[in-house]
Image 1 (cartoon, rainbow, N blue to C red):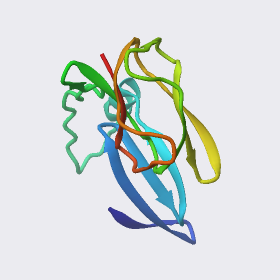
Image 2 (cartoon, rainbow, N blue to C red):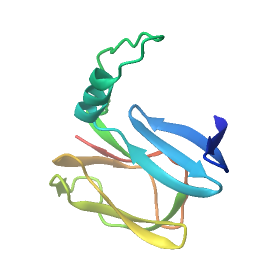
Image 3 (cartoon, one colour):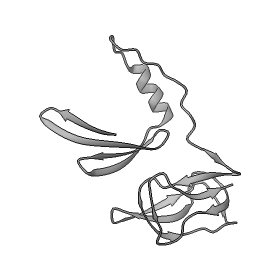
Length: 140
């Protein structure tokens, strides 16, 4: 969704795209960033909101981890090109271990596994272009 936001005398064009629950790609005047909202911070902010003319309902926030078949997905946080795949099917990985290198905006970004397990599926190869939110690797 695109918005025009005015702060003081400055006007900004802001585009927000949801990558996954609580994770968004935000573009401000063409500069992009990936923003993740932590569940605890989200709840704290909404508890502090005091708007006399508005009601705020805080609902339970869904967990970001999503089971897929017998595994969990590692998704691209931004669009880019796969430079190097560091794991193969059957490899055991630990939480925080790099699984591939993604080049985006002329920078190489290490994509790490947020959980431990065995690589069930590698859905990309070197040279592939990927989109934000696309599944790269499945860990079981």
